[in-house]
Length: 506
Image (cartoon, rainbow, N blue to C red; front, side, top):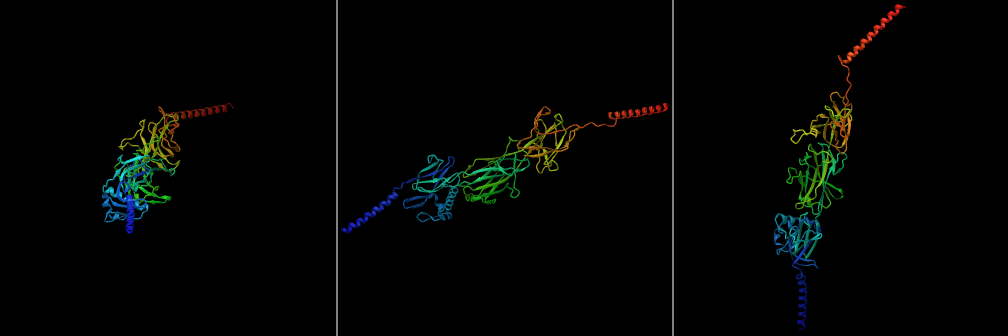
């Protein structure tokens, strides 16, 4: 009897122990939730259940996972086996290192497999009933317990988590930004605005500020009609250099066709060119690193002229799944001059010809050509019907500037000091003896008239004076000269006769 009591006591203790163990599992809810902190309203979040959580003890840290049916083929791949071991009973065990880089590498592998093999997410924020946003957090509810991969269109995964029963993770994806800059050739400084000559090569750079969760980076760039994308002679693709700036300012030059490729032949979205970064390169990026893309454009004959007209170049970054940063833009200005030819009373006169130089004496001629319409046949005229000129490209032969109706406009000048030389004066007027200096400083040199009278100090004003009429053979000057000579001769004869008479009286 005593022995039976001891046995019963042992069985009761065992039963109690078993009941405690069963309770720890049985009390676990059948569903759980995942809360994502730091969500953005324009981002889509989706979750995939990789493993089913069969049972767990949160206190002891004991978890039992089996492979979810939809992911069985994935866990059978050699790539997945580097991270998980799956036994004959379908239980999955993590066997790789547990550092952040390794876990992130597995998550990216799983996400890539899901996209390639069209594995559908179990819930998505596209369905309002599945994802409820409160403030800056969003919550997926009624989830079968398991090990989940969380993805977002803002970039790569947010993270991996277990619903035991409720999980909370912080969105690791942040929005990258882009900064577009242009170089001012007179100072070498980079900024949002510059000035340039028509025909000048302008230097640009786009700076991508990397954010956490970088994925699918594609740089887009669009130039206005006044800019021509310059193809790099070495690679023929228009981008001169791409650099990665790491923490501490360490720079690395990226490899074309390995780290990035350039698409410059009519990209699908109508931009001028695109730079597509490889998945391997993007996956290696760290938050707060910078990618700098350098390239050039020529300010062409279609450039808009003046302070109110902008020759724009804008860039933006595509990232994640069809997500785009805001566009950033630079502005390039070029200016015009009016050459005005008048007499000393400011009346317009025709017939002068000019050239422009970069020095008061000697120096280099700044060549110009007639400004033509898009058909390259029709001259462009100003409001008074005068033909316009523009600065010539390096490969164009220049012409003299001929003034008609007393005024001519020449477009396409950068800021700077220039010198105007008169190569031919109007008939009857004296040509300038020295070059006339003029300065362009962030504005056109426009002229204003009152009828045919020049009435302002603007423009480049050149005054010619008439010369004095000189005597000519057979003209009035000769007659006067002959008459005067006759008078002198007669006077001499009278003096001679008088002297003879005086001598006879004596």
